[in-house]
Amino acid sequence: MTTGGGTYAVTGSASGMGAAVAASLRDAGHTVIGVDLRDADVVADLSTGDGRKKAAAEVLAKTGGRLDGAVLAAGMGPSKGRERMITEVNVLGVTELLTAWRPALAAADKAKVVVFGSNSTTVTPMVPRGAVRRLINGDTARATKQILRRRGVTAPVAYAASKIAVTQWCRWQGTKPEWAGQGIRINVIAPGPVMTPLLEAQLNSPQAKAVTSFPVPVREFGTPEQLAAWVMTMLSPAADFMAGSIVTVDGGTEALMRTRDWPAPLPLRGIPKLVWKMYRAPKEGQVAKY
Ligand code: NAI
Image 1: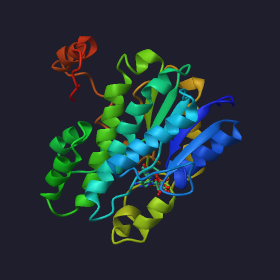
Image 2: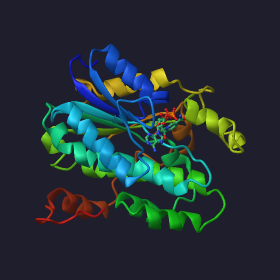
Image 3: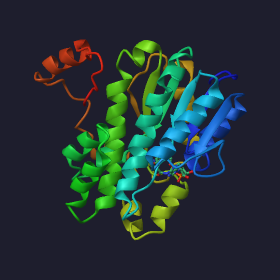
Image 4: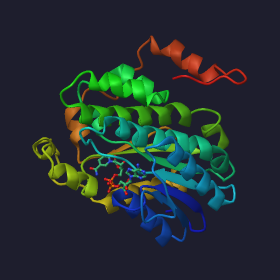
């Protein structure tokens, strides 16, 4: 458990798991700066560049230059026709905010960041790798174009691509000297189906069958409170020795469907890449590409 007195930014604080995390933090005596489309300390639309700038700046103005942690829970589910918006909120709504908040996080003593990914990152087929790479580099327009070109079930693919991209961004950035080396711990929580308005919307849509027929070995949905308890641990000193990890809390779906895929030995071709990643320092003014 985190001891009280800290300041935390929570996006998606008005509903579901973001609301449950905000309540747990407040119960533990922390100050929460909630960001959402409504009912929040900072009302902003994370699907637009201006909205993200507003959210980043208004949160910083309320922190006094120091953030003990951030929880990025704002997100859109796989709703058809909104593929571009899904990628804007789920990817840039995390990466742009965290980049703006990095100095305030570095100013705290071992700040903790928890980003909401999803187990859809591991159980969705046909997600184009090129689209994921474009999303990590912030190009939502070309990524979405690539996804829409495939026709068929584009919204679940856009959703999974957005969550794969944001998860890989966290593992890429979170292990860099600018983040891990500055005391900031970025980790990802990957829920399976959790009973929130987002899941309810899916259960009331034409995708309902796909959701209910998906195998969940424990045979029940999760609750926002269960997920909030894991997030609270990931915000506590228990996470001091944790960077770039993915905590999957999904009733066993990922383990069932990907049993033999990981853990896996490091392929020999991975070693030079690893060394390159560890020692390559970006040149002055250079924008790092994934
Ligand atoms: P929810 O729908 O209850 O809450 C999401 C919140 O994000 C809402 O308050 C909504 O207003 C906010 N939001 C959406 N678009 C926004 C925008 N453009 N600007 C600002 N705020 C915006 O959803 P839930 O289930 O609590 O989801 C939390 C996170 O967990 C999301 O990132 C979601 O993708 C992820 N997740 C949810 C799962 C589930 O089964 N519920 C499963 C796996 C991941």
